[in-house]
Image 1 (spheres, rainbow, N blue to C red):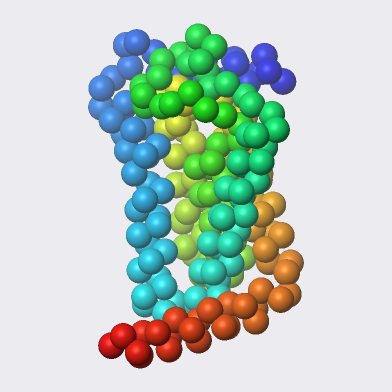
Image 2: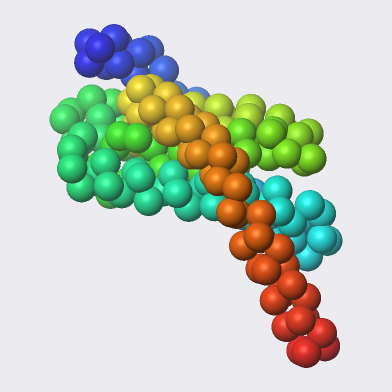
Length: 186
């Protein structure tokens, strides 16, 4: 598997002659999409669009990020540039590579929303998750299997959160508290 992952990385990563415009596109996808999605989540919350679905997605994302940290603490996998493969065009710090936290978060959100009343938003996030993953591989920050592992972990976390029946009561309480605070402040 390692040989296949390395071969795929070498096929997909930017070389020294990579076009500057493509590196710029990959950089934007790899770095800017997640903050834009976060801003979109805040906007959805403010608009009052299916807050339980939004809370499911955020819980799935946070669960995924927690699992990524546990995996990284138990089994360190170096990034490609740490072992002399490819270029580090993101100027990324050397830290655990598997699974990708960006891919985990994007796919946890996408799958969670795809299973909710905000299905179209979830389906819109799926290609963005793939684009973020491609950008991170292209720029030398991840192996392809890091992205695949993150995508699978994110999907599983979305399913786990959806399977917890008690979450509905917690989400209802969260929304009531938010609305009370909002009335109190304004």
